[in-house]
Image 1 (tube, rainbow, N blue to C red):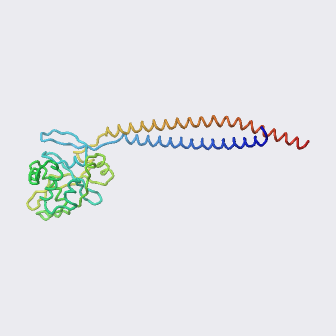
Image 2 (spheres, rainbow, N blue to C red):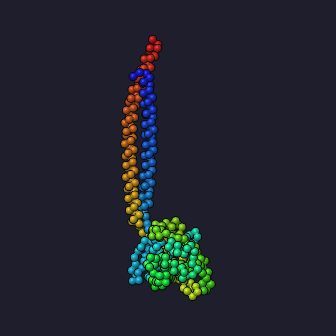
Length: 296
């Protein structure tokens, strides 16, 4: 190999070795990133396996007690069960009452002027929606099925009132709850735990408004409400385990691919290093030979 050819090959090898070293460094950064991903996945897994859910007791007229997951729908599920405990959810910042979107839509964005109008909206648009009842039939059925007490109390919380004894209760605004959110147990739990919403329980105590008995609400919370409990959320725990296993498998596969790339780079680098030393030695001999010729 001539002098110029040797130098050209030497520069080419040097450039390629530097390129391989850069690639190897990038791969090492990628492996470090995977290590961070693995740590994050583990942290999420530890948090996930401690997942809990809210549950509440539901009593039948026969006294049987069953536990159901707490959702917005379940806390307002007033029925003809005298022992069923009923709740109201309010916004922490505004004190507004969360209402099902069907009722909010039926009110056309404003609180009805009378209780009967409001109960009509509840009956037509929410409780008996789609059952083919006339408005009068739905309204009458509301009382027969035991729903009126709860929704009467809600109406006076919305509209505000002055009781027959002069007690003033300021009306509240309202916030719409979508059907999806109403049945999502994680939605209400997140609202309560993040301090965005307050749980209120309906009391046996009543105010009298225009000779009508109206139940009142008081704030409660998951820690002190004996009707509520916190249980392990098996579904979320199972999801956390599946997600962690999937992420670990994905990380391991990526790590193996990076190791294979590193191995190929190292093999090529070793081969080039051998050739590098050979060409370097050849250039040195060419220089020595040229120097002797020049001094001859």
